[in-house]
Image: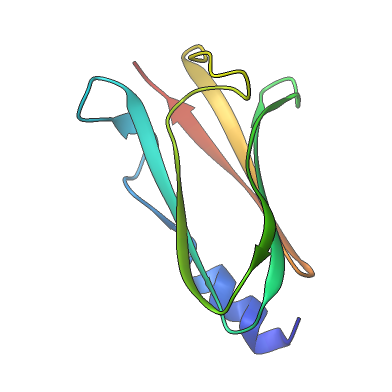
Length: 106
């Protein structure tokens, strides 16, 4: 991945609200994580709990150039609503990797 493409991804990881998990329209916590890339690359976005266990894999596929977004609705890979607490998302795109913290409130 080219350096400028990595910088663009870093600059455009956006979160829908500052918490970032906010109440949804149906009293369900949701957050939107958006990203952009200047070249095709494989993207993986994984949610972890505070014990570093995988809660949900939101993305694990190749993406084309452009802007993209994914919504996490506060559920695990089995579709179960997860508990209130601290969660982390790990974003990997090409050679770039970032981990951010979020708080799930109900």
